[in-house]
Image 1 (cartoon, rainbow, N blue to C red):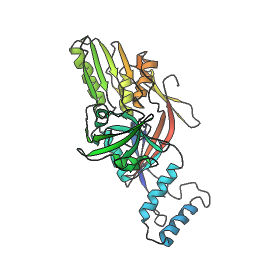
Image 2: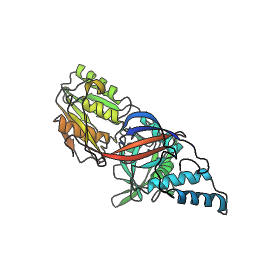
Image 3: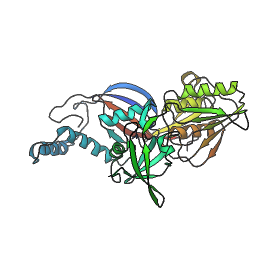
Image 4: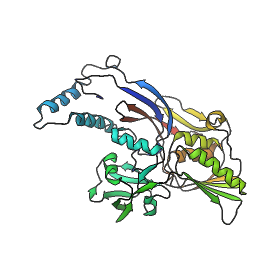
Length: 368
């Protein structure tokens, strides 16, 4: 029901394969959670080209018509359509499969460029609760002391429990300089914290020489966004020039990002032809994605290195960690990571709304 039943039209959409880099794609005007692959242009199936059994959509259309014509008050027909789409997707029971209306889609796509305003925390739906996955390094959320697994009970006076992820996000996000009072549950403790929304830093790589041993270069990757690969190459080159002969890479509190970034950065450490990750669709054998200097870049890091992770390291960060551990024999130091392992496809409709659909799971190089 992408269109009003009485006005059947073809719907053009773009299909792109995305690996969602965080459990929830809703962003509190925060770091990008998309992990993006190719985009192609496609047209949605027409009525004649779609296999349907008699009456497949007749009940949906009947309810729509009843509400439109017989409800005792005038109804917003566009709102009915949006509600039907959201309800159909929600019925799947998958937090990664979502219908995003035009405003939600625009908000999400804005985060891909790593330029956005908000509190700087990635969130997910956990039962009826909204939970922080990871505050972004240097963000207002981190400065306010928010931590992974914190439950957001209220935003100002609005109770967030029971809301959809997108509804909750709409009350938490806001313009730069504005305050939001968040009621937080952390374990058995409940408290309030005031967070001043700000522009989240675009810089995704922070680096310096170790103060006690100037032969060690420290590089923190805060998200996987459009400029991250180039920023990382610059960081390694400059630290080498300053005398670094080994590196500590840090993806703690990194909620993830673009798939291209995760693959190209993994490619810096993995030998060409070795597996970076695998994907497995329903009833299909797993497909390996291997290091390729021609398509992922030929810059290599050959110095002794380690990778730091924690419970806030999610999705693209976990892809990187799996690749470095299993295909580059790099030591991984830290705590258990967040845990996100599914692949989504995104259909962008002509009205700029989007449907995100889980189509596969992703595995480490060894198939874990």
